[in-house]
Length: 168
Image (cartoon, rainbow, N blue to C red):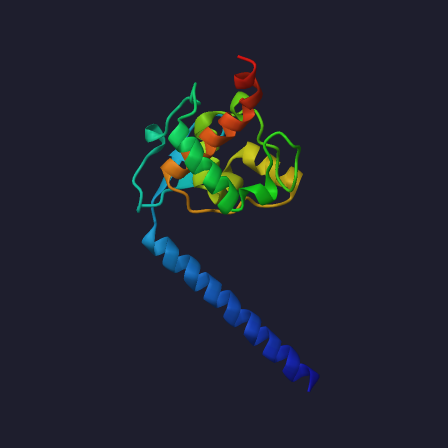
């Protein structure tokens, strides 16, 4: 009887694993493209073909002045996509890092890629791996568009520089 339970459990686990593998391979078949970014580290980033962009299409610099329209969208996304569960902007670390002044310490393209392709970044980028090791929680793929990722970063810059604007 005990052997039968063990066998049944193994069959269920195997079926679940095969189901997950099927979903992964099915998604891979829909999205086989991968780009490699050369630099300090080589980063392989899968490209979602529903939105066509390349690394060179990504803006290279943080916005000097956040766009109010993008700030509004970014605020909405930050509050509705679960960003607030793991991150704050100026209130200290939670499950993930505090994002205040991230524009002063991280490259804009790097931040965009982390939002757009967190799975690839956490697998291939040494800094993203170090953050994963430090906080112990994977950043989920929110399936953001490039505009949405930029909006989130504009919102973070806006919130980070709130005090600077008040003193001007």
